[in-house]
Image 1 (cartoon, rainbow, N blue to C red):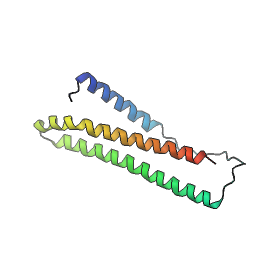
Image 2: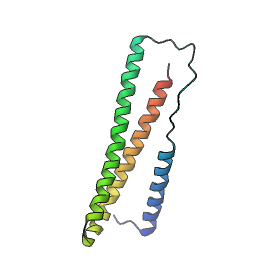
Image 3: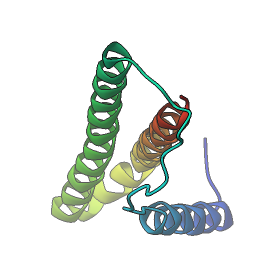
Image 4: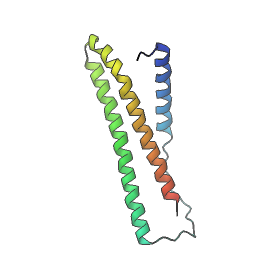
Length: 120
């Protein structure tokens, strides 16, 4: 599969925009409003805590794998000989798509975690 230069530029721009949007959408805030009608048992709270921790770990692992994968690809590209760089560029598209999928999956896990936390 051959990608034209224009398509490569479009994919690069989309990747950068997606990266910026993912990096700037992180908000660390505390919820100050607690619903008075929400009554839950200790078992509900422990299940919520365990599932929240599991989703956090899965999200962290997904982001870490994607970042490590991109760093390894960059190091491989920088340290390669000029003849090998063309070969690495061909296979880099697969790695980039995989990293985007991992970032998206971790974002979806964050959304699931937010929805699961709001359900009472």
